[in-house]
Image (cartoon, rainbow over all chains, first blue to last red; front, side, top):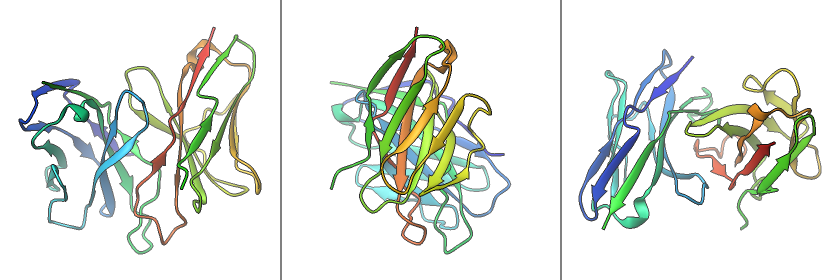
Length: 120
Length: 116
């Protein structure tokens, strides 16, 4: 079974600064995917960024980037130039690959979440 | 293109009553997932369905909970004889058919169940 651990229950950052959210995971799988999802107060979960385990290059999406350390089973999220709209709960999640062309099975294992507050 | 639609957004039930939560996936999506979020916790997988088939229900409690995704109409998560511990937010997510799936799940806004 997979586990995902987010050790920071809460983080805060000043607007325009950079913040890093931590995530570690445990798995015996070789083919898997990692995600960061954002859950703002409206509660709808939104995908922030996605990383395939077989790719060594860290994923980036505009102001969001990850530091994927496969051997250490670490998957941190860096948010640059933080904005007030980034205030939300952030969840790290893991999914096994389905072994058929690299697409993943939608059964995600989520971490406990990190509440991020961006202050003006 | 409408997103994942869930209803009701809020549902209040007394202990022993039944709760029915509905989910219409995004257009073109054939896979539906139900997740439960207890207060201050992450989402926990409950069940994965395709049309008329339950693919994986390993996260679903063995008693009182059931789910379906009929050929026509929304997916339904049904909780019989609710207890206070069932109070939670229930999220539905959908994804495209296999082969088009990037692994991203598209979530609805959730249904918050309160059991009195």
